[in-house]
Image (cartoon, rainbow, N blue to C red; front, side):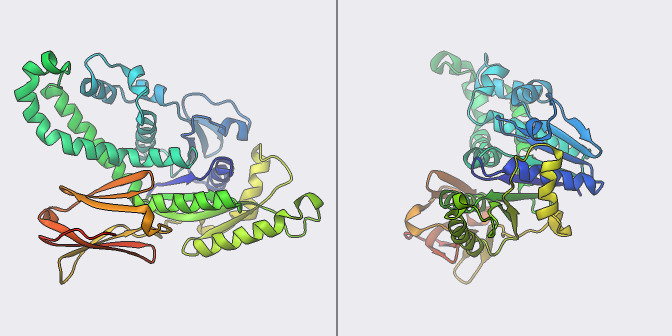
Length: 391
């Protein structure tokens, strides 16, 4: 089975170098390997000192590099979906206008990665993502779009039949015709497949890259919490740029104890994850030889590419009172969490991020009676004709 590895973290922590080192090691093992960047500020070409185009480029045996251009992918690979979305949004919309909509770049980047996975050309695909916030937008977008389509289009077919003759005149909106609705259904299925691929713990791993500094540590904890909120499997933490204790340099003398303190925090907070330490180097990590130092110093472990589901999926369990939903939410404080039931969904909001979890049909007549946050887990109790309690 092919595997996908997604690297994410705060900007400037060295995600690209860590992802590149994994790709080099994978290729050396004889695995057909693709290293792909979804960051619009691509730097894979700079790291490997090669010129890259709009398609994957082979840079050495078993190793291809690919810097995704969403506009090009939209035009070349997903013209049917682009046309479908154009029909949905506006009769006059085109690919260029779609590319300006929030989330469209992320969607087409992910669809391209999913297509490359299904083609079976590669044994391992390593994804170098943009900084944390953009990565979260990237990964949550298929679920979010699927949710909106799921809510809208069960009544959409009725709307097409009843409102099409008058909608354009009164509302300046032209609803999609029946053919377009079929296209939209196909898009929905494609989004569902993409969502399942990203959340398949045997296929996709999310790996966090960080540094032992206060702001980076705090963002890494939030990143981990958000990844759990959206049900992704985080199976590794890479602590980059660790200063050697015997550096004997006056400039770094104060930094070593600071790093030691935050290294302790990271190892305490993420003790459930495999942790890899990567040393600080006295040279720019540019070129094949320089990046190979990470392979030698930090990726010697043979199990580095193993599928290792660490975080659990959200779980519905029947109990004596009704049903219990358990969601992993590490590092969330009670005051940061908002929870409520909206029709057939449970809505969980943490800070600026919100997730709608659809309820199984059996729970459509149940209500939230209690919710408890403890030990990094949110436990939500559902009972017949229950009333919601405060978290």
